[in-house]
Length: 147
Length: 188
Image 1 (tube, rainbow over the protein chains, first blue to last red):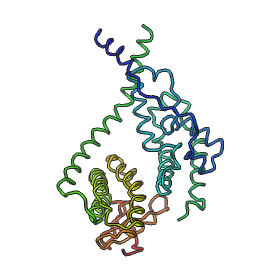
Image 2 (cartoon, rainbow over the protein chains, first blue to last red; image 1 turned 90 degrees about the vertical axis):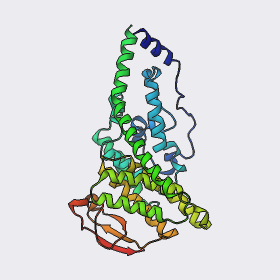
Image 3 (cartoon, each protein chain N blue to C red; image 1 turned 60 degrees about the vertical axis):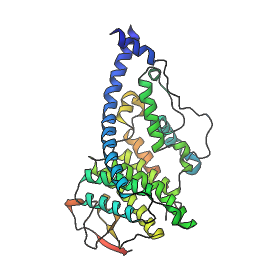
């Protein structure tokens, strides 16, 4: 028991690097496509913790190993999709990403249930789903997207 | 003492929510190993799109049979085929096009590889992947006769296309439910 406590104590000193960048990047998705405030608010609250350069860390992520799990999710999330770096994707990849975002929301795989379990406010209501999905279909039917 | 209890509770919660992710990782690395050995045997650095198209066709055929595991393996094989392609034989225009397609197609193939057990998700990625491979073949050449085929019914009648090595219709999107739904719209 004492050994477990000792290990738990030691790992508290091994904090993963934090995901935090203040300045808004040029490649931010809002610079590419018109983003209504309603959409921005939803994305920030439900998606940006893992899919942007700025994570809003709750208190328990200072406790290891929970902080590591969070860092892992953020790393995975950013490599899949980063809204702040969206403009750095080719047009082809942007199309693919938007399609995937729509599909993930529609089938409920995103936001991750393990995430919404601890962040109830990140859960997407039916209205919020509709708002984001409509925004995506609007972009997809815009002239930029037509081949 | 209280923080320790809360900490322990949070940790055990983290373990339960993240084990599903870990399970996925072990299957991922297993399939990755098999496709890695396959490509090592096949040899690296080919200037022909043959291996890319072959892996794509393998993937397509797995989906026609509703075989998500074979589809996943073919997906990883396709990733390797893309990685091993040598674009030094391409002209500047083609090389640019190839890189553009490669960055996107590779991700779709990876997703297909990582989603054995979720054939619907594999098919979603297969749709965009098919467009990528079509563009590749149009730009760089396909090393074999291919038939660009359309299924009008998939995805609530939005429809989707795929490349086939044969004129015979075998639908990868609807699989065994409706194997003969589709029309050839272009021969490559």
